[in-house]
Length: 207
Image (tube, rainbow, N blue to C red):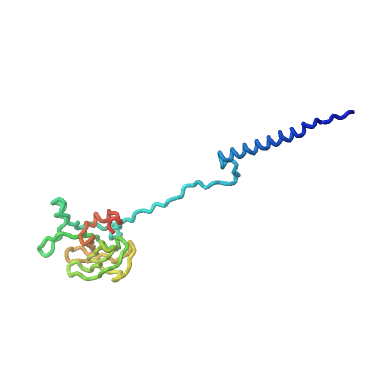
């Protein structure tokens, strides 16, 4: 059988065709990678696209100066803008004299704990002839709270308190026949605030 010889130009032509195919494939891959860099990434590589969790910090709430659910209001804060009836319910009668209440007088039929409405430092402890034992707490340079008519006192001057710490227990005074009282006052920049309004305020606004 007679073998045919390939003509001299066939092999070089095949080489050129193969090279053109390889060059074309490389160019195509390069173009695709530029158009979509993530297209050729391994499926095992997972890009972290999760949204960071941002914790919401709740605004600090001012607590009531007591913890018992059996406490009620005997005398409200005297507000000059209140109605005549509300003002009448905000007067304290003592030794034939009516006085405007500068805080809120709380009472109960049994002893109840009196607590710090916010963190602060015990500024003063004293005894008042009419209102009984008194504890004054400074919460910041502009804000003070005062607790009158306490029985036993659990704190001392200079002590740093956390919100809700027990200051003492309810006690007696000379403006009420009730044995378990707490007269609570709030001073902001030296001015009296209605304690009921104070408990609804944003503490950040009182710095």
